[in-house]
Amino acid sequence: MARITTSEADLVREHEARQKQRAATSLVNAVIAGIAIFVAVAPWIETGPGAVLLPVKPEWLVTGPAVLVALIALLSLRIALQWDRAVILRLGKFHRLAGPGVFWIIPVIDRITRYVDMRIRATDFQAESTLTRDTVPVNVDAICFWLVWDAKKATLEVESYYRAIILSAQTALRDCIGRHTLAEMLTEREALGKSLQEVLDAKTNPWGITVQSVEIRDVIIPQALEDAMSKQAQAERERQARIILSTAESEIAAKFVEAAAPYKGNPEAVHLRAMNMLYEGLKEKGSIIVVPSSAVDSMNLGAIGGLANLTPGDRKAATLPRE
Image 1 (tube, rainbow, N blue to C red):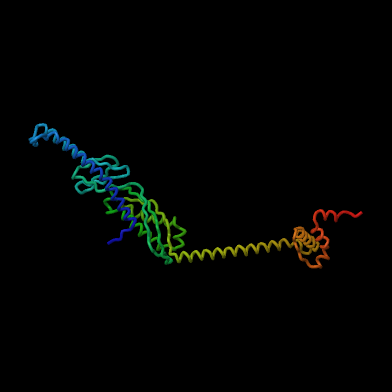
Image 2 (cartoon, rainbow, N blue to C red):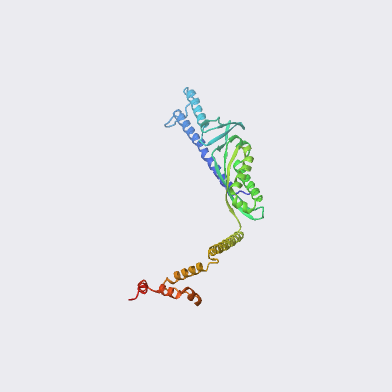
């Protein structure tokens, strides 16, 4: 027995529900016809004790055909919804398409074989445990948007067009997965969907069906492979971070070399820069700087350090002339 997928079962249930809903019109017609017959026959029946059905009366010759015509009219009346097309067979052969709105058929001779929905429909399908070109098992979920543009072909050319859509979509998806790598499946979903749409549209057009688009919704890979890919991505990020850090160090070193160029062969500039750096460090409270004693003697840093450690009031007093 053929395996029925969830999507296909949903389509079958949906189709059966619509057929039952549309068959309600026939049931209503039959009920109305029965009421009409009862109303027409009731005056002909004698009531009271020992009442019997009267023999044929002259007025029956008029009333009988009228009731028959009304009954045929009621049984012939059908209604198709705005998005439906009724496929009518006459004596087993295709006769015409009817709808939307009210239309008439000949009872017994004409038969409505199917109401075809002409709206755009969305059908989900999937391919389970299919190997990619690089032998990675994946589960892929996709959505197919399609519509029937010729109800006659969809009914006469294929037995069950909604089942044919599902099976064709699954087959095309499996073939597409086998021709691409996992990386392509993850990064080129739009292109893959376009490719699937073209394949399915070429296959379903002879059935009077157009596939407007196919969208790949999800690509599921094994958990072990997902963990390995996560570790690989993390290692790649760390590698990039170290490259960026080393590049920054190289740029900083180059800037230091560039900044040192003006001081080359100029001891006075180096002397002033050193004094400025020491002064900036000493003026912060609690700062301790250790320098060689030769630097203290050569740059007179003792006086500078003393002034830097004095408070603003003490510094002013130290700089006033003595009387």
